[in-house]
Image 1: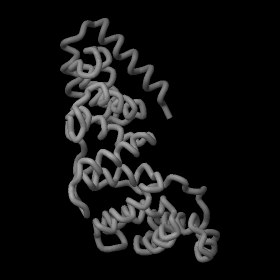
Image 2: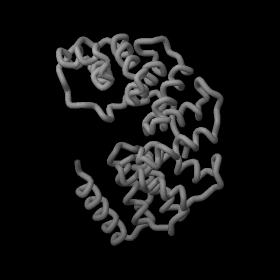
Image 3: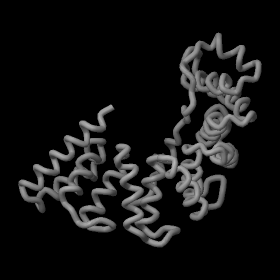
Image 4: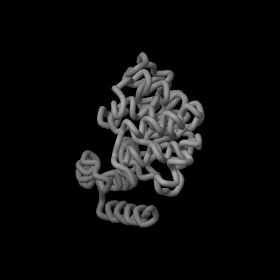
Length: 251
């Protein structure tokens, strides 16, 4: 399986980690003007979303920048996203990298994950497998599901690391248990093939089925083909396990 898609890169998400409870701009604005970095970040987020104020990307950038220059990691990450997507500022990959790196070096998992994607595509920086591995490892260790899945694929493919299916399965499982559909598909694939784990059609079906429930179409196709290789008892067991997993992980 490939590590990522252009769509995944395009969906570099805005970081809301650490966001305070929604506050009216009448409260945030005086605090932001006084230099409160958290207020500046939240005001930027309000302008980005159009929450309590007209949506205005340029105004969002303005407040994100003020907070980012004070070292606010969430604002640094979000400012990087704005430069990456060209929202409120001209698109500038080098500036996106600059702000992602500042946030990533403070331990922001989303910025670390996005830096990995940037180094994969070579946007604003040369392509660099070692840097990609480094940043995805840092994000994965913090529980970022996308980074865990990508790291698993690097180990599965021997991409920048010795090929190690057991290590791939370890990272796929972490992401799959968080409900990350691509990792659930990848984990199902490893159980079906018996790579890194003993071959087990019941568990393969389980993970394919969970991925299919999250609209992974390829997982649905392979799951339905896998049924032809299973006994009725195996299928019943796999379906029971899937129901129990989904009931346990309902939010």
